[in-house]
Amino acid sequence: LEIGCGEGGNLVHLGARAGWVGVDFAATKVQLAQNALPTLSFACADALYLPFATASFDAVLVRDVLHHVSDRTGVLREVARVLRSQGVVAIIEPNRNSPLVFLQALLIREERAVLHSHRARLREELAGVGFAEVEVSRQQPLPLARLLPHPGLGLDGLGRSEIISSLLASWDRVAERVVPQAGWMYLIGRGVRPQTVGRSEGL
Image (cartoon, rainbow, N blue to C red; front, side, top):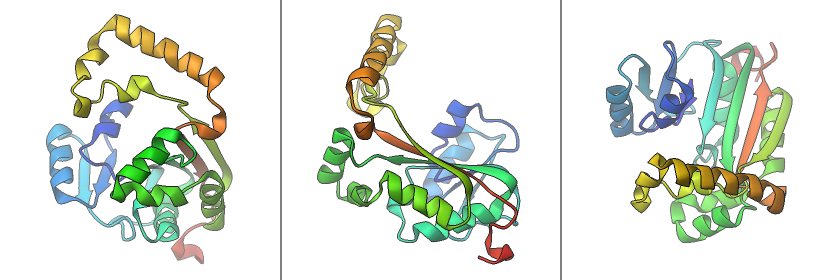
């Protein structure tokens, strides 16, 4: 299950396997995702009230969502509820200590809440709703390979050039050595659902 699937881009990049499900609050995005991936299932729903039975999924992905919701703990409880025992949640959030993320938060009002999303908080939230084996790592020091070919910049053709792709990959390797980890762009949180997690089991 992906919560906040948007137009389905993450599911495409991950392989779009049969049985995968996407959920988004925006009906227009859900429709676009369904059109792009007709073999998968999609639903328009609030992350606080997922339309699935308890223990329905083996894994849940939540990317760039938590800093947009008012009840982060409620969303994580819903994630725990729909996960099967020993199921895994992966949370991807911007790291406020990244200069790029900080600048984006200052310039874009809708991203301002990311300034309250940080590594210690994500770890505490996952552990607080009962997830075990909680880990929060930092990834992508300065991902030019992801940013420059973005269609919004009109430079998406760069991604089709083998030479440019090779240069950008080399830059990523250099950036890993020179950019302090505290300022890497993304936080990756992971947790495992033990049998005691979930609303129907006491939360």
